Structure formats: structure tokens, C-alpha cells
Image 1 (cartoon, rainbow, N blue to C red):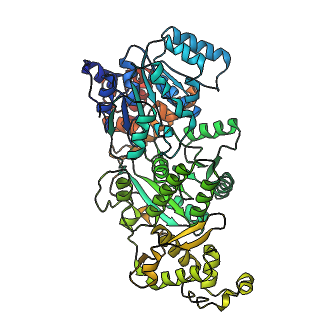
Image 2 (tube, rainbow, N blue to C red):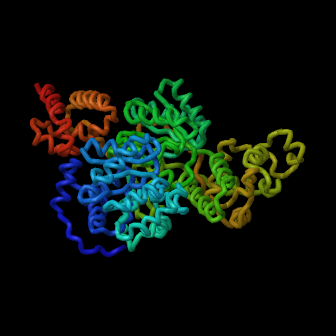
Image 3 (cartoon, rainbow, N blue to C red):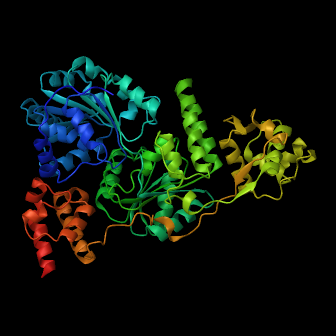
Length: 611
């Protein structure tokens, strides 16, 4: 951790910006320490959970400093949303990217030269453009903010080559502080971020990775559309949700299936035209009761606070990916669901995809370790939250009472004999066959290939009839996770024994596995541990009137409703019941600019309701 230099900070000015501009009375997580570090002009790395308020950590210093704050951001849609949101607070912010025409770019560049812009958002490849760099060299830069900083590290889960040259900023601007921000980075990734960005003796702040309002649940895949439909109907029939799939083809199919079931579902992936992606993004930002079915192309920078669930229909490639994607639910702190289903084929598919990349061997080995950790999370009997937090180096109690492992404990069984049967079948068939074929041998299938090869004459043929195909798949997944077997050839998906196999085969070790898990259609889909605050004010009808008013204002201004006011702000209005502007300033999320823009119209609505 770096040592703060002696720059005197005007704490009254900091508090004034926090309340007057952003409408907040206090900081969250490590926001205060991170902001103080930047104001002391120290390089800083901030690890904060999705929805934890990372943006404020550079937006507030940008308003405190005299010069320009430059924000390096990976996505055009993210830049657009951030800038639109800042303008709602009357903050002079702009972005420079390929979505702008020449006239728009010239206008922004002129205002930059005149010092009329406080925050500039730009892509990593854009800032290192010689023209942009020369322009910035002639300006007073107060801070560089690098968002989604895990993209700079090959140890991270979304490595991007565009980020690797960002250390050049230190060559051009050695005295300008840099803040790097991300929601997901283990110790090795954190160290790599600091090194790759050439951060100078940085202060490192790590907020808790826990999102107590999110309930985690992981199930085996059987009939995914039926399972997903049951989950949504029971828990989120009218809520906003995101459904992640591994491939574009599957995204299209799932969106189509959900639409046929009566849901407002829309596909989003990188294969769609930019116009189509933008249209879906806008619908997601503005519409209620919408479901986005997407690849991870629909990802970083989702600001909508009221996403009530994130569902995965395939295994994510790492715990970092899973954590970041599930973190897009419940950014407002209200109870939300992270629901996932997976199968053995996901593990095979992800490994095949990894082998086909042109990445170096070290990256592939690291990615394989991360995938193994994700499979272990899925197969474990332990509390999901404990595993997640331990993965990021954070201590956690043994139970959280807000995940399926805690709420629906699984039965275990002595699977030693069955594991021996499987391992013997792998060995006697030559360690060259995949799970499907091995299960057919175990169950005594009369498949022509089995008969041709004479495998029906083996002593293991038919010795596994007592277990169903799905049950054998569950055994295979657990043994893979526990390293008792491995996949030797990813192209042919062939299973093989490992050094650990012998202790089981020789009966020196007893193997206890969990029974095949059935998804329970229960009302435990949303955490009861964290009670929703929505109706503490006892005015749900007023809340609905305010929502209608908010939607009308948003449509008129062509912005998402949450950029006018969040649900939390509307609920706070119902609780405080403001009668005048001074009362309204007590409401969470209302600062001077929002009060000036929208205060009177909302006060009038509340006054009419009161009458």
C-alpha cells in the first residue's frame, strides 16, 4: 500500500459535492478511502462489488479537481449511459468514440481545449491515438480512471489486448494519479494490474465481495426451458432479468422459446448488427418486465439497478465471470436471484473453446485452473457464498442461509463402489472414450458400436444398470471436480484415470458424493433473510403513481427511467412524504441538480396524492 502525500483536502467541499451533486448523505464500502487516496494524488486500485459505487470514486474527485478527468472505458454503451447519467446531475461530461460524427467530435474537442468538460470517456485504443494524445498533452489532466481494470491482466477473466498499452500513460503523464477499478480480481490479478499499468506504489482498497441480497442457486440441467420457465413464473413473473447462454445460436433459441411462452424476451450477442444491439440495449434500459437473453457480449457497465435475477443456462468460464455476471442483479440492494443450471457438456465445450484459441500455453493453463474452480463451486456441498468469498481471499461463515446449499441441503451417499465401476470401465475400454459411451457400457446398452468393439464381453458391461444416465453424469462431474478422473483428449472428450484413482480402485479411500439434485419449485427463490424495504412506507399506490410520472419524464427526455430517479429514491419519497424542497433534499439520491430538474413536478404529485 502506498503512503499518502501531504495534500490538504477540503472535507467540507467533498461532503458538499457528495450531497449537493449526487444526493448522498454518506459513502458506501471503501468509497471514502478510495476518494481520499485520489484527492491525495496517489495511484489507487479499487476492488469493489458490482453495484458498490465504483463510478463515484472518480466522479467526485473529477468535480473536486480543477482539470479534466479522463475515464478509459471498454464499451460504447457503457460510455453512453455514464455520460447521460452525469448530465442528469448537470455535470459536463462527454465521450469520444466511433459512434460520433465528425461535427460532434470537433465540437467536443473544442470544448475540451476551452476547459469546459470535466469528465471525458474514451476507449483504450482511442486514448493512445496520436492525435488524441497530443491534444491531451496540452490540457490540465487531473486524473486517469481505468474502468474494468481486470481487462489489463492475462490472469483476469476478460483479458483485452487494447488495455496492454495503457502503461504508456505513465510515460506521458508521470505526475497524474491513476485509479484502476474492477469488481473482480484475485490476489494474482491485483498484482498484475498494478504492474501492467505501472502504478506508482499504489494504495489498494478491497471492499467486501459479499452481496448479501443475492441468493445463489445452482442446479443440474434436465429440461432447461421448462426449468427456467418454472423459476421465472414462481419468483419473477413481472421482473427484469438477464439470461446468459454460451453461444449465439443458443441465445437466439432461448429468446424464441421464452417469447413463445409469453415473455418479453430479446436476444443480444455480438453477431447482431450495431443498430439491433443498440435497440435491445435501449429497451433493456427503459422497459419494465423485460428479459434479455445474451452472451457475455451483454456485460460490463450495466447500470440498471432493478434487475431482479440473472440466470445462467451454461457454466461460466470462471468464478470471476460468474461473480461479475451475477452481480448485475440487485444493484439497488433489494433481494435478487443468481440462478444457474449446467451439465457435463458445458465443461467439455468450454475446454474445447479454450484449446481452439491462439492464446499461449500459460494463459490456457490459468484458464483451465479457473474453469476447474468454477466446476468445484457448482459441485460442492458447501455454502456457495463461503466458496465465492474464500476464492477472493475473504473470510466467511460456514453458512449464509441465502443459497441453495444452505436452504436446500443435499443428501450424500457412499459412492465408492459406483466410482470403482466407472474407473474400471474407463480403464478396460482403453481410456479413449467419452462419458456418453462409457455410460452406455455401464448400463449394458446394445449399441452397435459397443457390440462391434466387443465391449459387451467385458466384465464391466452392464454393471451400472442400477443408476440412470443423469445419475452417472452427476458421478462423472463430481469425480472430475475432485480430480479422480480427467478429460484426456478434449477433441474426443475421452475420460482417463489420474494418480488419485488408484486409492479408490484399491478400496483405500471411501468416496462420499452428493445425490443427483432435483430442482425444487419452492417459494425460497428470493431471500427471506433480507426483507425487502419496498413497502415500509405503506404507500404502494403512491409509489406506482411516482413510477408512472418517472416513466413519463424519462420518455420525454429519451433517457432510462432510473436516470431520473431510482426505485430506492421513489420509495424514500413515500417514506419521507416531502412537502417542500427542503424536505425533498432529505430524500436519498436527490441533490441540487435533480431537485432543480424534477423537484416541483414530484412534489406536486405527492401533494395531489395527499389530498
